[in-house]
Image (cartoon, rainbow, N blue to C red; front, side, top):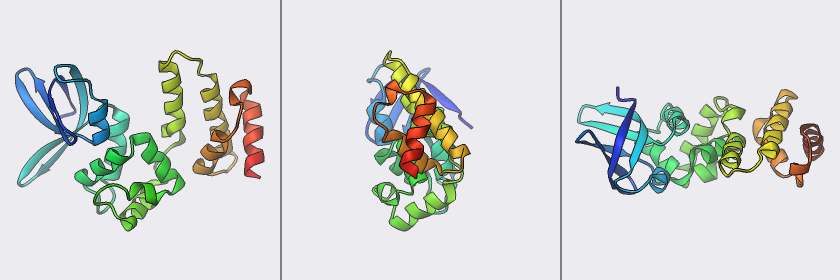
Length: 203
């Protein structure tokens, strides 16, 4: 269907934006998180979209990155969570926070979304926990954010390498991420030292 819309922002609300593409205004459903990250009215934007077609409606759901769209697509595969439910979840948790919540089994965080109860949150975790890869977690975003700020990315790269090594050793992704993120002075350590420190925390 429609893979993305690329145009000028005409209007923004917490749940919807209108994108002017060549004189045609597209209503696109968005999360509150996406709304907060959009540039201002009159600015150009590209939104990756999911098209929902029903007997009585045709709706576009828009996201600023393929990363956001991908986790949305995974959410709507879960029984009981439709496009509106997935968007509600992404309004209280950004894509990386949601992935981490799934990995760590944090149903409480997910159930804060309007219309998402504890049982639905637990079902989402159960069905998606094996579909989330370590390179999709917040560790990857830390590297991107640090690079964007102009700083050296060595410490974040070391974190990612250490987490990947721990997973290879048989530890769970969630516990590996938590162990690495609690290490102090990581910016002065090489990846081997980070791994050793993380292993101590896991023993």
